[in-house]
Image 1 (cartoon, helix red, strand yellow):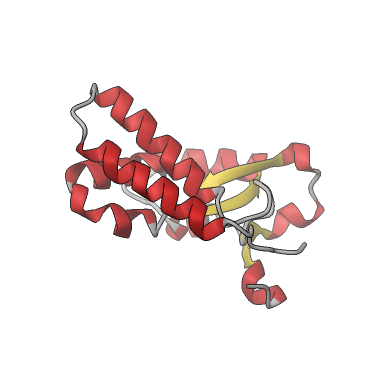
Image 2: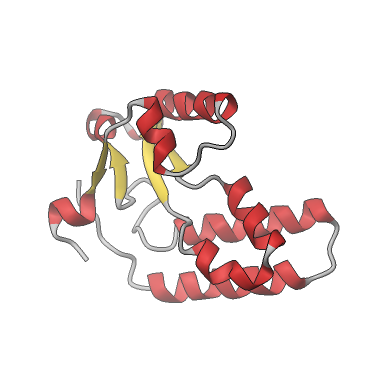
Length: 145
């Protein structure tokens, strides 16, 4: 699998970050604010790869799985990213730098969901370790930039 960066990745990330910075400061109905910030997080995790399923990070199991069995997972869960931005609007840039996606199989995604329910304070790559999911960094393994 090849990892290639979208030619407009930087501009797409800048745009989604600018939107999040504006949204976090608006006096919006809380559920609307969370939904709009969540969309910004999605836009960031989909900004760099050429396609939703060709992210930099993927589980080893995705190498032989058909696309219909793949899931785009947020390494740091959207809820925790939302919470951090709302709690401290000055931290939007820092928080969104942790908005990273990893493609996993649907069964691995189910395992990550179970881990999140069982250990609600566990986030990031620790969830993957707990679920026993092997991750490959395709930028490092392919030398792509």
